[in-house]
Length: 385
Image (tube, rainbow, N blue to C red; front, side):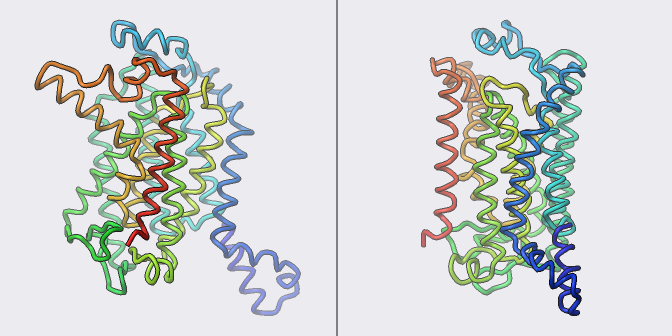
């Protein structure tokens, strides 16, 4: 909306209208940094100010988080038993503020912004259904794993198909050469590694599903997933910004360039602000949990943004905490099925460290530190050669 206001003002200013001359401050709305910064500020302020109202509403609706019984998780129940009844579905706060900020400060008809927002909302709806089922049944089991995985993959395929066909009209360039969205890149290589062709559609869907579930697995301690979301979103906001500017992308960093990608910085900075605002209420001891409503949506949005910026492989480094959490579950299940033994005291890995004596706050802050360094490392790789 703000960019459309700028365009209206600019047309009037070029026509020499007096009101436009007197409102020259509206010229600032053309700058992405202004709109992205405003989006970040708005989501933060709205989350902090209206968060208590949302929390009270969730409490009144009795949407408390079910905690697994002692028979299911043994000692962990002693550590987390006091969290029973804490309202969940707080992800609606993140989704709502991000959507508002994108509509106000961004260009929602930009195809990259549109597809990332739609993935976030679609997966948020799926997560909401999962949370609602858990609350209704008063159980830690929500929508069945197979059903959830099917809809995640379906949403991922729809988004990937849209990107595959849409970007033929607005393609990428790398080192001055045209590049397809189906070509896989990595910052250490200044040419595409290979072209996946139409196979990029299931590949992108897998990236979206994988990241969505990885964030969901990370969301097990107060503020853990939220803090890591902030660092990953901020890192990709920087990447989106430079990938959408010709000089920085094509002549300095030699990374995939697409002028439309730059608008993703507004979406991602809105997510950063919403993350900080939610963390205000979600830090230990948490007054609200984001639930699957937030975690599934955030993971899918981050993956989609990474795909749009053509840095999907870099997500393994920047989102290392999410990768580490998901891999710990995969390794734990594989080891138990193959050998009957567990690698970790419990998975995801943050619970392993809890059971090894780390206080919850220690686990959270140390994982945040890892996430910050992972983000910095990912950005540094853009100009390592």
